[in-house]
Length: 113
Length: 116
Image 1 (cartoon, rainbow over the protein chains, first blue to last red):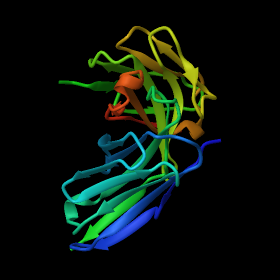
Image 2 (image 1 turned 135 degrees about the horizontal axis):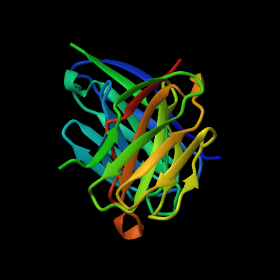
Image 3 (image 1 turned 90 degrees about the vertical axis):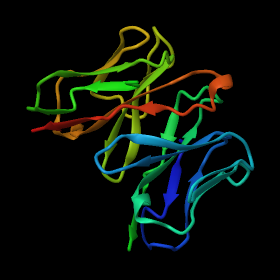
Image 4 (image 1 turned 60 degrees about the vertical axis):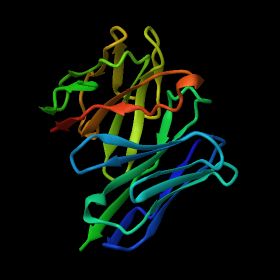
């Protein structure tokens, strides 16, 4: 059974600080997705990581994938309040057809002034 | 540009009632999915349809049925609702095939369902 574990599950940060969210998964996959969800809203795609060593950056967020370690990280640089949300990683176990994702439980990020 | 549209947005049912959640996408996607989201559990896949005419069980299919009506529409039915099915239900769609795996799944706004 595939397991996708995120940590921490809760993260309270001060504005301006850096932090990393970790996503570990238990089976072979080279496709990993990061999503953001604001309270009461839908999921918004942030990053698509498709190979070992993939790194994507958007603003203050940077995601990376190490398929050998079965680990993805989402790094937050100089956090701002607008980044407060729940972040999910999801692993594709369909062999590339992107029709079956397994999600982590999510990391609730709160950025305080 | 509507994307993935779910109806209704909110619903309250009594135990034992039935209802169908509707989902439609206008992105010409082959694959569609139903998830449920519960506090602290992330999203769990209920059923998915890799292409028109096919459906498969996901992680938590018990108590649900689905119908892929056509390429655009994928409905989720609760035949006899139970309080344990109180949840937020999300529909999603995606392209299919290795060539397109750089595209993420696209989600609807969700249906908030309470069963008393």
